[in-house]
Image 1: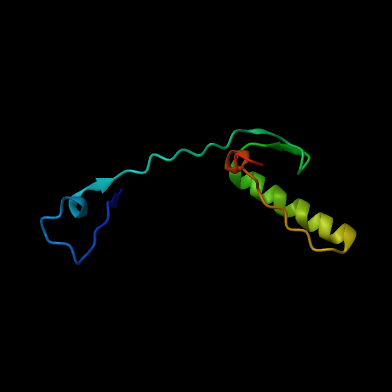
Image 2: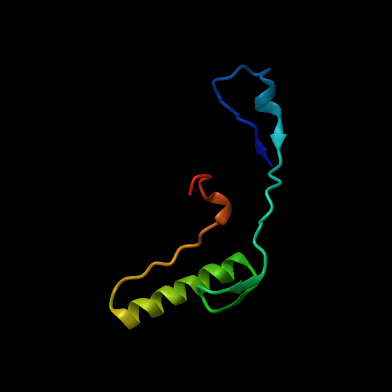
Amino acid sequence: MIRTHGNPNHPSNCFGCRILTVNLHQDRFQPHFNHAVGKAVTNRREYLDELKRASDKQSETTGIDADYQPVDLNDRRPDG
């Protein structure tokens, strides 16, 4: 839990400085077969590790630096 804002310059009776918040963010990663790495991945850490391995393999094969990065399709702009 973290303080809502906890600004030391706020008065001691600041409600926001006294409230603790809970981060309920859930990892939206779902196990799936990933075509970029050519295998099934079960969690985000494994996915990132496999992307790194695939990048290294591609760099070694072509002699051109590759740096594969995860892309979340939910982050796409509405127009593109």
